[in-house]
Image (cartoon, rainbow over all chains, first blue to last red; front, side, top):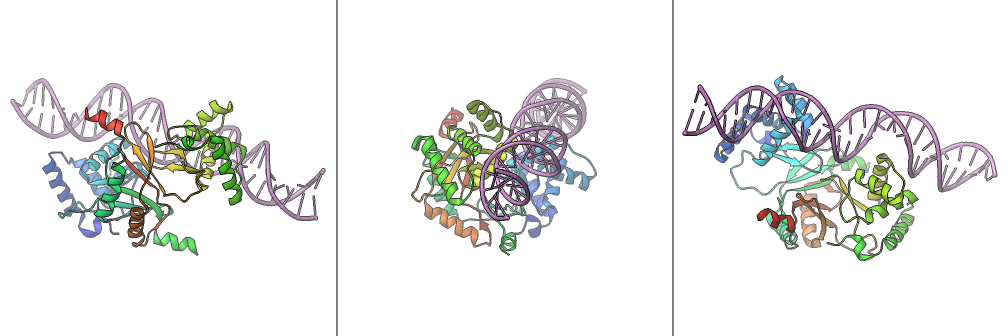
Length: 160
Length: 160
DNA sequence: TCAGTTATGTTACAACATAACAAAAAAGGA
DNA sequence: TCCTTTTTTGTTATGTTGTAACATAACTGA
């Protein structure tokens, strides 16, 4: 599936992010914004260290990884980026500019080429899953799933 | 939910593991078996380093973490242990001795106390989820889910 | 302005994981 | 058995990921 950048320009997404932060009463500082811009321009999920390096190249200024982690935490709290805990990488939310209500994103992680695609799953299926889990007394933090496997490209390559 | 050790003795599980490896034509060496035994006796998911230390205490012999990783990789390939990628820990499969067909295990990871419980979800729900995902061209490796949240104990503690 | 809060930088280190190569042990055929 | 090959395990060093603790800078609002 397309990353956010295919759907809207980076600038318009950043503008959406600014509005979202203003509404939430939090600050999208210049650095946070710049880091988000860097991530938006990636086609792959990025680790914090990879992002620090990319940020340096993009903005001609180095940035401590410690700060990158903090900014990513902030951006994740505002749902502007998703943290993929299974592979310790981050990806910009593909729906920052969407005004319509959308489903919780589900991520498909290719264990071979490490590409990440974002799909939506029927709300009903997730609800059933969530209800089954919560019935055991567990309290889900989110319904974001991270599923592993092979993308079609790697699957076909492996088969040959 | 109960770990494997509550359902069957460690010895009988190890015997099942031996049979499974013999059938698969792979070697469950003494060290691999000993490591599995160590993990079976834990009530919590363990990191490779924690396991190396526990192994040393259990068997009076130290073992390089490098070897622990390799053995865990082997055991995971044989589906004798599960790797919880989200928290970098390992847990013995609760179903090694089960001959009956069972559902794919789903893991509930408490983000507070880091306990892990294993639940089963209706096959139908998982099938629906899996079919939706595979329809996008992605090929799931397994239907094992790792869900994050708070266990009931931590949830109630946080609420107070 | 200035005091309080939030954000970022710096340093040091803990925890997790693997690369590269060496040694030991097991398997299998002559 | 003995030798060769393959597999497993050990050793050393280093890479990768993440955070603690504290300092400095920037912003906010009275």
